[in-house]
Image 1 (spheres, helix red, strand yellow):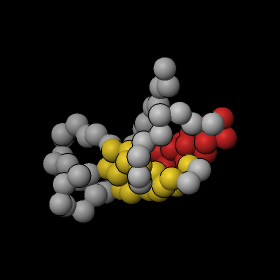
Image 2 (cartoon, rainbow, N blue to C red):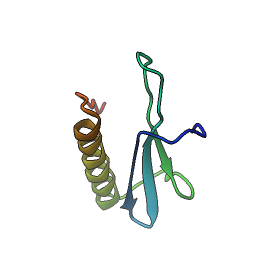
Image 3 (tube, rainbow, N blue to C red):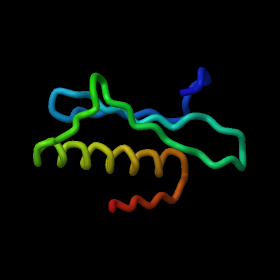
Length: 78
């Protein structure tokens, strides 16, 4: 992430790990990208309960981001 203050940050727990979603500040008109970072190692396999925790946290963070930044956001899981 850039040294500049991000415009949005949310974190949640997935099992023993903390996950953080960050959106950096970008110049107007520039496409953005968000980062999802895991404290510790990224799990190679998650249990069903951990997968549900991840999705619930991610979906809540994205809903908050949409409201706070006034964005329309679509998530497509493949």
